Image (tube, rainbow, N blue to C red; front, side, top):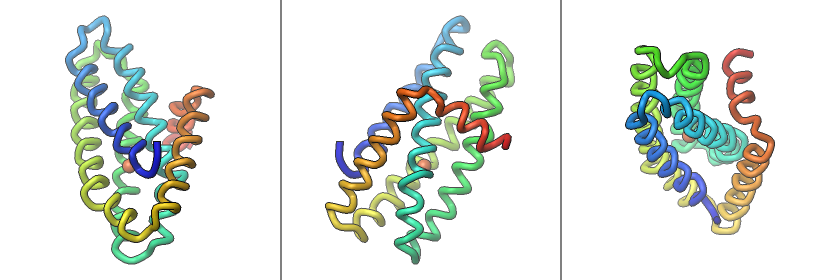
Length: 158
Ligand SMILES: [Fe+2]
C-alpha cells in the first residue's frame, strides 16, 4: 500500500468497527470494542509518529491544520482511554462510545478533506510513497507487538 492509502483504508475499517460495536449484542460488545480500540490506537500512533512531523515541516496553513488535528487526537485519546476502564454493560459506556464515534468521524473528515490534500499538493510522489512505507512499517510493528493500547494509555495518563 502506498502513500496515504493506508490511512484512508484504516479510516474505513475503524468506521466499520464503530458500527459493529454499536450494533453488537451486550455479550459481544466488549470484544468488538477491543478490535476497534486496537486499530484506532495503532492509527493515532502512526499518524503522530510519521504524518504529523511531516506536516509540521510543510509549514503555512498545513501546519495550522496540523495543530487542529493534534488537538483532536488529544481529545480522542482521552475518551478512548476512559472507555478502556469501563465495562460494556455500563450505561455510560454507550454514551462515551457515541462521543468517540462522532469525534473520530469529524476528525477523519478533516484529515481527508483538508490535511491529506495539502500533503499531496506539497510533496512529490516519492516523498508520499516513502511516508506510506514508514506508516505501514510502524503499523505492522505495533500490530505484531500488540502494544498500541498500552502506549496510548501511557500518552494520556503519563
Ligand atoms: Fe488523525
